[in-house]
Length: 205
Length: 211
Image 1 (cartoon, rainbow over the protein chains, first blue to last red):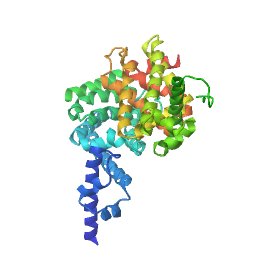
Image 2 (image 1 turned 30 degrees about the vertical axis):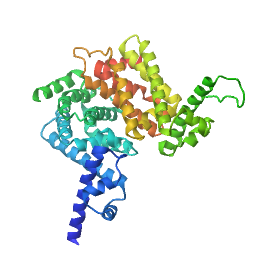
Image 3 (image 1 turned 90 degrees about the vertical axis):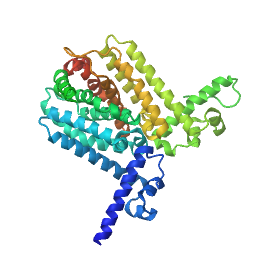
Image 4 (image 1 turned 90 degrees about the horizontal axis):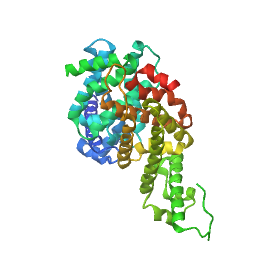
């Protein structure tokens, strides 16, 4: 019983790893499920024992990528103090992760995976995961910000990252950090303070 | 779009074809809003437009081709609106607010068009998604040109312009999906503040928006 569960967990991991790779490279729409099953080295039957279909395996792979990104951001935030520095550290870590894991980054924000019926769902998960972190900055703001602030900021940053991920310009990601940090901090801290934190980020880079 | 009288009407062929084309494009957008891309068929577009299947195929070789034409057409109409608002601008900030306002008015008045450009562009597959991206990028210069620097600072970095356009498009798309296209103008203060703050600071952004 124990060993069959181990086998199952192993098969599941292989399928998710293949799914990340294939969806990240060729997208949701253009991927027949056979393209996930074959490289995973499992039978069709095993696949359908573990997943209901393409939609579910895509969501699982997407969720795993989101968890990994979240782990990186959490780790980086834990190494510094104060909300503005945490934002800077989080952005730096997220961009470094995207550059190191372009296929997973593509699965999260890239056009190939965004196109398709799951586009809105994936986008919502991304916003839901990171908006609360950003929202903490409201405690530092001198003004009451619009309720939609975090949603637009995260979508805007994801869009800029997506452009470079789609163009396979991984090397262009890290240099974006100061720009994106300034954008994210400005509504909360004002232009001058936001720019100061971004400049420190630039100096550290 | 009015249908033309049936039978002999003596109208020039070009006029008839142009009229059919416009009706088909409008019908496609309405079908998409009603049932989404997958379930929209050439037959359903033709039926709604009052255009026969054979006349449909004189205009477009497929549903995809009709979709792309409708998409480009809608983006062009939006661009014309934005361009017009920008041309009338007394200054950069007021121009941006007025361009956003006219955009929201257009989407509110024609929710099917809002659905077409903001939502179906993401859902219809890779080819159209690329068009969506190109269209989105083509709005960046309207924001970038003439954008000022906040008091005592430098102009925000370039990624800001792209992120502002992308962030707004995404928010509007979410609202369309939530069935709130008809309440879009209520978002004007939020999105205008989002657009202006990086360049002017919150206080100045709010002063312009409330003026």
